[in-house]
Image 1 (tube, rainbow, N blue to C red):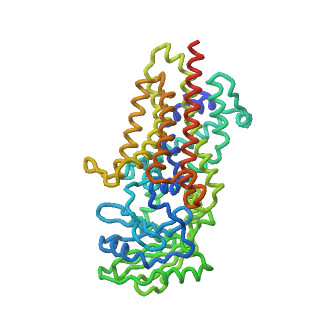
Image 2 (cartoon, rainbow, N blue to C red):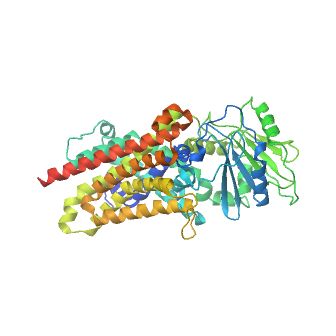
Image 3 (cartoon, one colour):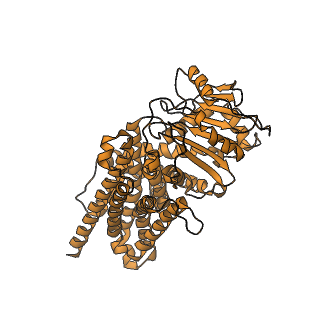
Amino acid sequence: MEPAFRASMNWVHTWAGVVLGSLLFAIFWTGTLSVFDREIDRWMMPELRLALPRDPPTLDVLRPSIADAGRARSSFVAIILPSERQPVFRLAWRDRSGLVVRYLDPATGATLPDSGTRAASGFIYPFHYMLHVRGWDIGVWIVGLASMAMLLLCVSGVVVHRKIFADFFTFRADRQPRRAILDLHNVAGVLALPFHIAITLSGLIFFYSIYFQSSWRMFYPDRRTFVTEEIGDFSRPRLNKPGELGSLDAMVSEARSRWGGELPRAVVVRLPGDAAAYVQVSRPFEDRVSLSGDLIYFDGTTGASLHQRTEMQPVAAIQRFIVGFHLIRFRHWSLRWLYFGLGLAGCVTIATGYLFWLESRRKRFMRYGLSGFRFVEGMTVGSVSGIVIATLVFFIANRLLPMDATWLRQDRSALEIWAFLLAWLASFGHAWSRLAQAWREQCRAIGVLAIAAVGLNWITTGDHLGRSLVHSHLWPVGGTDVLLLLGAAVAIVTASRLSKNRRDAAQ
């Protein structure tokens, strides 16, 4: 550490970024993609490419699936009603094998064919907050550590930059690479600084019950009891006697009459198949930031109203507002694109921070032959272009693997994830073995893979940009194709510029 405060902050900013930059880039990249997770789901699950029906869906057609959950002794069945972003029923419950997810046609209630993929909402989004490390919440803790480092980077970055407002308007693309990279780092960082702080802090607050378990373990025997009192929830014990579920449509109709005709966003059947079953109907929250929508609880057998939650404790209401800000579940396409753009700005900030560290030390480290420089450069390539390649391989595997594909007792969805992880690992190996050409070659690979993903979507499903322009329910698919092609163009242009710079340097 340095004796002066600003110098100390510069040291912290540099080394926190170098040590945890790779992890932060992966978190920001997958978080940015998660802004459009439902749209990517429809690209990866052709079975979901249905038009949203005009008439309100009937929930009583879901009885067979709810009965399946009851026979599995699941404590709940969560039903997400069809919406603009996901025009099908989505049912989820837990059995002995884990989480079961089933999609149903909104018009007929027929179970749609299994897509054999976890897609974005089942893999990319969870990877964002737990890195696909599930045991003992280790992944959540690692992401929490990285989030604290991100807040430290934001604060120390403000201290380091004496002319932070001037940096916002300064980008000298015609200067030496080191100067241009630093300018881009400053512009992207300052532009999205409020968002980066807010989104990182809200992510930490999201999981406060994991990070600060002592805050509720002192007063409550388990998390369920804590949540019940915190947010005004309702629960009752299982009777271990069979029970017949009443009409869900009647319960939804009663809820709509109390909410001025609003169609619920979700329905949760608690204790399905038991005589003590009860039904939680959630008011939609697409028109607000907070997730603290009204809840009405009905007796599962008689349909009688048991409890209505209209407000929560003040602290809980603030926490749910902050979580709603992070999850962006509200219906606002302009803000959704803004989140996406600011998320990409975060990726650019992290990547350029790495690049500036490398360019400012390249000559000195090479002169003394220090191996640490090669390690960091390989980490940078694999962390930035490598995870993009892994994501594209994930998409391509989704389009190429047969529906019944299995290998080493791994099903199709697991094989897609293995393709992602192995491609990411291979990108690090390639980077360390071919440092001089790694950036250029991996950018070319990104361009080829992105174009291949668009082509395979067309070949395997028949859906392409032309069809997306004609059929509105295919716009998410066409939009994903457009973003893939734009990414391919950026990668190819970047590879061309890198080749030109290399030739100029050789001359």
